[in-house]
Amino acid sequence: MTLADFLEKSKGRLATQGTDALGPIAKDFASSALVRVFKRLDPDLGYRVYDRDWDVLLVLDAARADMYFEIAGRGRAELSCASASTEWIEKNFAKEYRAETRETAYVTANPHSNQLRPTDFGLLDEVWRTDWDESRGTIPPEPITDHGISAVRSGEYDRVILHYMQPHFPFIGAAQQFGRMQRENFGYGVNTENVWPRVQTGVLDREAVIDAYRENHRYIYKHIQRVLENTDGIVAITADHANALGEWGLWGHRQYLPSPAIRTVPWDVRACQDERTYDPGEVELSTRPTEEQGTEGTDGSDVDATVADRLRQLGYHE
Image 1 (cartoon, rainbow, N blue to C red):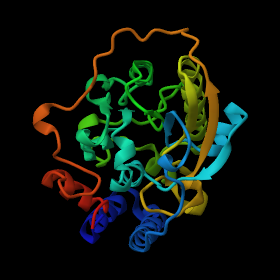
Image 2: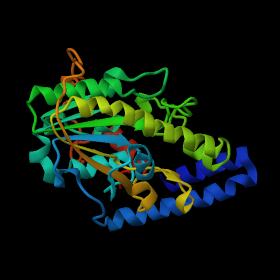
Image 3: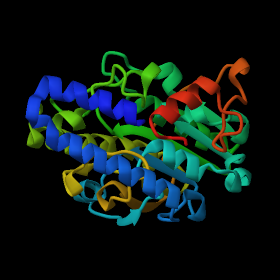
Image 4: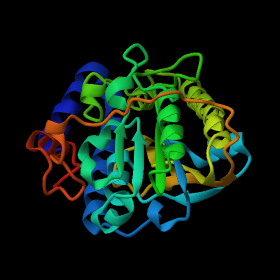
């Protein structure tokens, strides 16, 4: 976020909230300054997924370790290398892991995969392009599971990653889902009902939102049991990042923040055997159109100018 963007956002807050906006504005300023310092220092914190032993990796977007343990009753806490999905993708799929990614099927619900080159993977299956649910403002877990099980059973890839959108808001597993996202503007704050700023400013009830967030953990954990029963090999369950719930005065997440609340994620390893209790049927891959192949990449060398400009405005690139 540029200074001009910050001032414009702050002006809008003051106009609608008056002096009540001063606290959140100060916290935004402090966190933005911390992000810039931390990004420049770029300390080597947290683990990279390809440095671990697994055959299938289940990534639960924005899952907190404490909430996961409360539901699963197992696993351990680890420090993620990232505090946002864009940063996680950038670091885990960097050039140094190209040999590994080219033998990997990455099945994803997260539209930030748009920054990747399909040719850098054995398969880049961007399910969000075809299975986004506009009515709920997200992509539900079922198509990720179907595409993931199909990729594993094909035997064509050394490793398979299933990146679910849950428990990230909207909390579709709860009675009140809170918030929504739009695929076309994902990550840019446009037409996105982000719950966390509204919790921070008191527009939404904190306990109600936290309870819904917890229920979304329960919802996705129940759903991934289908993968665990229909997969052979070592399956690891983790998250790209978590969400702060008031720690350090922060709510939600943003990239390049060293907050333990945002970076502490679960790491739960299972030895699985395919019990064939579920058949996903014939799956149609959600691959990028040929004309869009090879236009983007985590090294930034071929990133589309429009995408790069929008990311830069958000502070994702210098």
